[in-house]
Image (cartoon, rainbow, N blue to C red):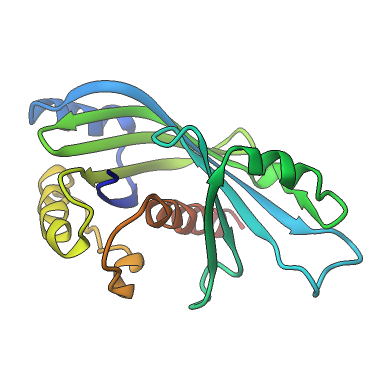
Length: 198
């Protein structure tokens, strides 16, 4: 079962965040990573084919997450498939081409504190540091209305000097949370980081 997670950018360094987590008694349990590759329509099919984003998370190593459509659109298409989809997507090079300079990668450590899993990672785009991303997951439930208040309290406790807003994915009133909802949050943070660079 996937818990409910909030994903956000932090102004603190990974070492600062990890020191706070360790003060609360959190245990470093593993390494984690997330990646995101944009795919853009090739010349000749622009307008008839929209781009997409291919994402992976080490929590679900056998899965690929696909997000299609503009990031801020109210109607977007999201799908989850096994990793074999990556091979299919690579064969569609006449229609969609990977934007490798626009690839985001997050690498860091995962901590466990009772029912919370906190993932803290450094983010790079094309080998350029873009910041720090934090994912706070409440693993005891997949029901957002039960988990959101608890995650909000944990975020306030761990990041007292930072105002953390509830992610927009929860404005949809989703009845049950899935890993695709976490990946959508990562995509929003990546896009915000990319906008700051331009």
